[in-house]
Length: 216
Image (cartoon, rainbow, N blue to C red):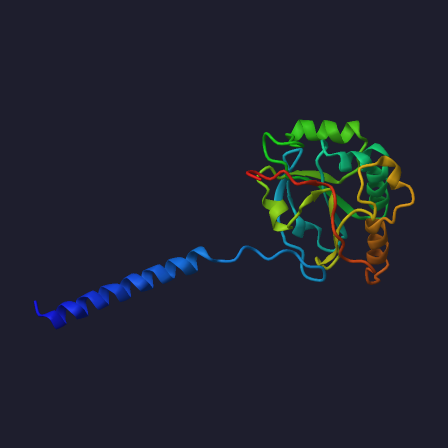
């Protein structure tokens, strides 16, 4: 084989290898799903609730929906349930036709993880009033919404767009006394959405315990 032909062969093989490697880089650098944004469609999802029923966000189009991330072992969650603050919000929302979905994204073996019957007992014991408790042990729904803390709150309007996301109120403390006099962002946002008005404070920094995702 001549030197020139050998050189062309090597060059061809290098080109094929470069193309293959380039394709690999593209394939492995696909960006993750974008984080949800206020004013844009809320990410659709399907999850099984504590009674074994499959729940789809899209089934509630035309209704206002609240998504609440929870972990019963978290002291910040305990503040809002221990004072009855969360239950009052849930009951008030239900009385106005709002669908309240509580989501548990704690992975098996982590704080806050429960199975269906345990979740139902927890709801009963703390006299909670959600329309359903969604079990998300793989963290699929939580990551879709970029849920970071418990609690982390989201409101979806009747058109399916995200109207609010963030903290429940302006007191980032586990002290039960701070519920008194707190500015409740969720209550304010719900009132605005139900009145067909813009939400004054549509996005805030959530506070609480980190969501106990698998491998986190």
